[in-house]
Each structure stands twice: as C-alpha cells, then as structure tokens.
Image 1 (cartoon, rainbow, N blue to C red):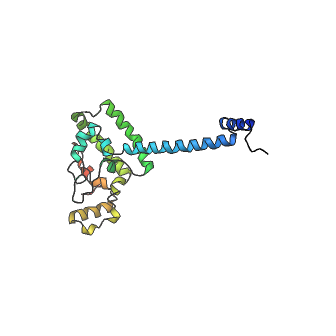
Image 2: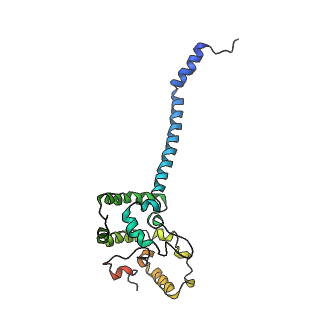
Image 3: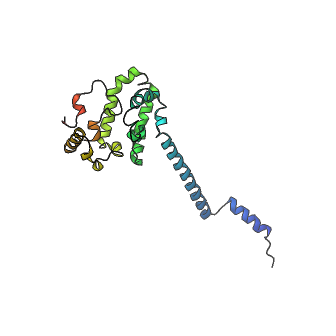
Length: 205
C-alpha cells in the first residue's frame, strides 16, 4: 500500500486551511480575540500611565506656570527624607476604578485648556478660589484618600510630634475631620477670598 498523499487528498488539506470547519473557525476567532484583547488592554494601560506622570501634567502651561511653580520648594517637593509627592500622587487615585473616574473628570479640564479658560495668570487668579474649592471638596469626599496613601493616621505616633501638631491631630480626630480640612495651602498658595472657617476643621481652632 502506498503512503504517498494522493492529489485529491492534498487538495482537500489546502481547502481546509482556506475554509476551516466551524470548530476550527471558532478556535481561531477565540485566539485572535484574546490576542487583540491583550494588546488593547496593554495599550490602554500604557496610555493611562503615560497621562499619569508629572511630565504630562506640566505639558499644560497653566499647571507649570501656576500651581507647579508654587509647589516647588514646599515640603512635598523637597524634604529631609527625600520622599517626593508628585502631581499624580496627590490628585490621581491609585485604585483602578477611581482612577478611571478621575480621568473622565479630567476631560473637562482638557476642554477648558483648549478653550483658554485659565491660560493667563490673571484668568487663573480669578478662578483660583473656585478651582481650589473643587479640589478640597473632592478630597474631603474621599476622606483625603490620596493623602492617606502616605500619611496613615492610624500609623502616626502622635506622642512623637510637637505639642501643637499633637494637640491639633487629636482634636481633628475627635471632630471627625479629614486631612484637607486642616492642610489647605500645604502645597499651593491659598486663594484670595478664602473664608477663615474654611481653614479650620468643623468648628475647630
């Protein structure tokens, strides 16, 4: 018996490659779908991380010439420990779901960038209090989540703090205050027109 492939059999083999069975077609579709999904997901996350850097934030001169210039030299920028908090550390959540929500919200900021809403120092100053209150409200609504990524109150040894800081932290804890209630202006200038009560936690002094 000859083991050579007959012409009719060879033709059938090549036809099966061009016209795979439903089973093979579904398998191929699944493999291609998974591959595209992996590439798409990787590309999406790459783009997310690319927009989650200080360099990206500073690509808008509104940020570079205003709030970033104020941030330079503050305790979050330069300190004895050498631990530096960048723009995304304070303003972009680390958890993926919250990060996506923040990115969607940021699309409105991009819209105003292209509109030129705060493209001059004068325009920025006119909007500063409104912008600052938006950030403070957002931070308070999450119990200062991004602050707590580095500053975990439950891990603080208040006994090692100076008297004033210790007293204020203990008072804030009793009042149920969150970080941003007391620490406005720690990385950026306080806006003109801010009310005195906005600088104290829920009636504290």
